[in-house]
Image 1 (cartoon, rainbow, N blue to C red):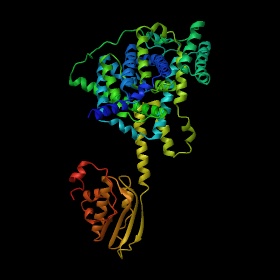
Image 2: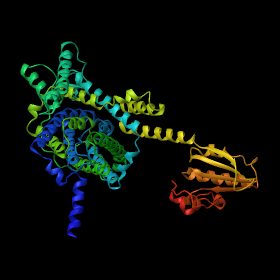
Image 3: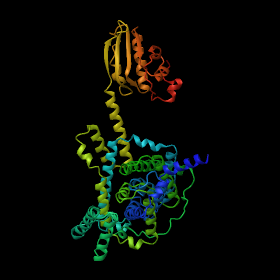
Image 4: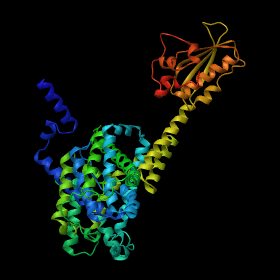
Length: 545
C-alpha cells in the first residue's frame, strides 16, 4: 500500500518535470546556465512589457506586474519547462477598447474571468484539441509571429516626439534619420554579430546576454546618445499590491467583461499551446497541454487580483530562453524574479540599457523563429497546404493569432473534406453468388461531402431487379452518410427492386431504419464507430422512419 502510494506520487512528480532525475540534473554548471538564461529573458521582457502596456493604454507597471506574476506561476506549474509567459501584444490589442470605454478596473475583472475560463479548459482537458492544428497552420503561425515580432521592433527606430508628451513612449515619434539612425543600426548589427559569433568561441555565458552586456558597456562607456530603456518609461515600483477589482458585482458587469474574457482566454490558450508545441519540437518533449491551460488560468486569476494586465506564452522570449540553454523551470522562475528585482532595486541600471541591444536580440529571435524551410518546400507541397501557410501568415500579421489559427484549421478541414469527397467511386460487376444481380463495390469514405457523388453512382431505373451494394472498401462516417443510404433504399423500393447492403458495421445495423432491413450479416463485417451524436443513437435519426 505504501509502496503503491509512493509510486503514484513519483508518477505525479515525473509528469510535472519534478522527479528525482530532474533534481539531480541541477549541477553547478546547469544552474549557471539556467540563471544566466533567465537574466537574458528578464532583460528582454522589460521593453516588451512596457510597450504592450502602452498598447493597452495602461500604466507600464501594469504590464511589468503581469510579466512577473504570469511568468512566475507558469514557470512553476506550466506544462513545458523552458517556456516563458508574460504580457503580450496579442492580448493587449484586444484590451484597448475595454480600457478606453470602461477603465482599468474592468480590465482587472476581465483578466480574472479570463483565468477562470482557462482553468476550466485545463480541467476539462480541452488542451488536447491543439492536436487538430495541421502542420501548415503551425508553419504559418511561426512565420506570421516572426514578422509580427520584427515589426514590433521597428517602433524603436523612432525618436521621442509627440508620443513622449502623451505618455506613449517612443512609438509615436518621428522616424530616425541621419547619424542617429546609422548609430542605432550599427549597434543592432553589433549585437547580432556577437550573438552569432560568440557560440563559436565559447558558451560560458548565453550569447544574447553577452550581446546586451557588451553593447550596453560600449554605449555607457562612450556616452553615446541613443534611445535607452528609460526613454520608454520608468520601471521603478514596489511589490504588486493585492487589489480586488473595483467593479459592481452585477449582471451588467458580466455582460461587459464576458465577451472580452472569452476572446482573451481563447487567444491566450491558442498562443500558449502553439508555443508549447514549438518549444516541444526543439527540446524533444511532448504533452502537457492541459497542464499548461491550468497554469495559464491560475496565473491570470492571480494577476487580475494583483493589478496586472494578464498574459500568455511569449514565443520570442521562449526562443531566447531555449536558445540560451534554458531547459528547466529554474530559468523561467529566475527570469520572473530578476524582473521583480529590476522593478524594486535595479531600475536605474536597467533603464540605461540601449534599446538597440534588445532590438538586436529580438532580430536574432526573428531569424531563428521564421520557418525558412517553408519557403523552400512551397513548390513541392500540395497547393492547398502552401495556400494555408500563406493565409495563416497574412492573417496573423494583419489581424491576430487566434483568428489566423481558426481560419487555417477551417480551411484545412474543408480542403481535406473536399479531397475525400472526390475519392468515392464505384466498381460495377455482375454477382457470382447471386445470378442476375448487379453489384456496386463502393470505394472511398461516405460522409457529408461525398453523399451527392454517392447518389449519382446508382441507376435504379435501369438496374436489374436485384442490386447488391458492397461497402467493404468504404467507410460510413456520419449521419449524412446514413441518410444517403436510407435515401438510396427508398429509391430502389420505389422501383419495386430488391436492394441488399453488405459489409456495413454494427453501428450501421443499429442506426439505419429502412435500409437496416436490407443488410446482410457477414463474419467479415467491419467494426468501427460512427461520428454521430447521441440523438441519433436514441432514435431521432431517420426522419420518422
